[in-house]
Length: 259
Image 1 (tube, rainbow, N blue to C red):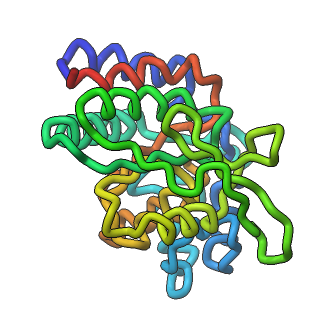
Image 2 (image 1 turned 45 degrees about the vertical axis):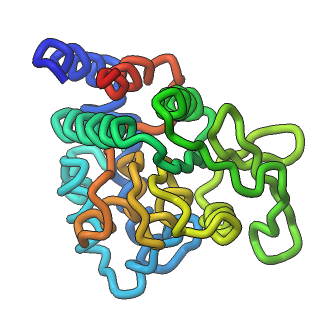
């Protein structure tokens, strides 16, 4: 990004509360760190790091990737904090990786989100741009149904403009679960995927499989920061993941500045 563009995006992050003072409370972040180390499947994101992680290590990972100090916040139930410079660095890293993918041509990319109400348009724009640059957008198990909680209850996978989402037949669903990406990778074969772009369990499962992954993590998604601090990935972007999609447009534009 140019200096002017970086300054403009940085100001937007703070005004929109995509970074800086964010809505997620420090108490919620710390509680999710506890849930992660207990092995709660809605917070492990398909990664096994929780098996030997401590709460202190997990909180420290969030601090390192997101900034702030959730354990010693002035108001545990007030706003949380994502360091704007950390978000800018993540945006720049995603931009570079997307540029490299576009330049290489023929990259087999898998886009997937567990947060369609916030991030779907962002991923769709990135997917279209990579496709226009010659990349192949993978769509394994499109319109297939998954036993998502091992009890016989089923939710589907549906690709919308190149991006996998979870749906229940009539509505898109928010999901942290890893089972959907696990099924897609089993269907397509991890060796046939060059890049994954996503969030929540969609991203964590890809990281666990050793795939190059660009991921978005809110401050209360500790599994992804922990994975990055432990060296399993280098593509975590710390940013609020569920504000109105219109607020994400400048972030998307900055990532696509390589065009």
